[in-house]
Image (cartoon, rainbow, N blue to C red; front, top):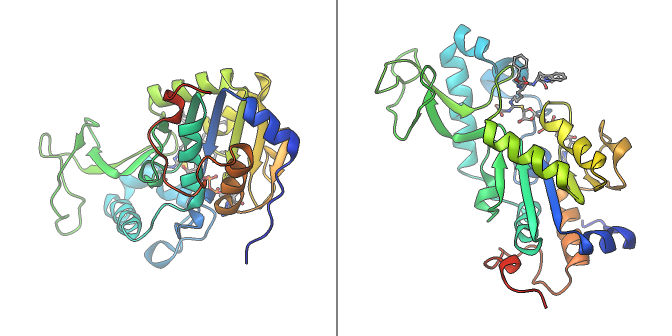
Length: 268
Ligand code: BV8
């Protein structure tokens, strides 16, 4: 059942003129790919846990095996999902907007798989594993033995997912690029996030302060709805293709994988 997505004409005009656009995404954009959001209750072994409890250094210190297995289960589940038209539409925008940056809170890697190139993963990527002591990414790791996660081949410390846990600093370069782009933006999209986790949730406010047009795409209200100029209350997999088709009609359907950088080709 496709719901008609109304894209305001003024928004179309503003985005068509925009040259510097930043998109911030959260778990909601991957929901239509079958990836549970952070608000969706955990299931199975983890049903009794709040994700915010498990995604912490103290949880890993307390029970490394439990946390390792939680991430291993999420990693395995990602092997059976595909990017959806929402991811692909943002990859299209990357090919169409001169100065574009996609900052995601998601660790699922679906934006990169959809063809997004100017992309920063603010909270890391679940496909990578690193040493919990030296923070060096390791390419291969053996299956965990008995009750422990696998160990670092260099120093013997436990291995852990290369994601940012609560109370841990974000990757400096990724955060700096996202903050800088937000402070220079003339348009920003806030897609599928409950906007409660910082410093990511502050980015649209920096764009707002810079005079950017703020567009929220979310079926539900969020703490950022109040600063949005436009709110598309619809699933991202429907709203984003409609938005890209409205702003850049005839630039091949928004749900088709992007061709090499339209932005590199001289604009007529
Ligand atoms: C840090 C990786 C320094 C791991 C994650 C300022 C104020 C208050 C608190 C703080 C602050 N500054 C720092 C903090 C502390 C904390 C924080 O923000 N706490 C919150 C809970 C209040 N921040 C940190 O700890 C950060 N580090 O600040 O370091 C420091 C050091 C020591 C002590 C203090 C500070 C690190 C934060 C990163 C944590 N790692 N993920 C993993 O994935 O396992 S966060 C994780 O949760 C996600 O990455 C994401 O960021 C967040 C979940 O939010 P969403 O992605 O938005 O998902 P959610 O499920 O909540 O919502 C889904 C939305 O989608 C909904 O709105 C829904 O309506 C919508 N939706 C559903 N379907 C669709 C849809 N939308 C569109 N289409 C659909 N189809």
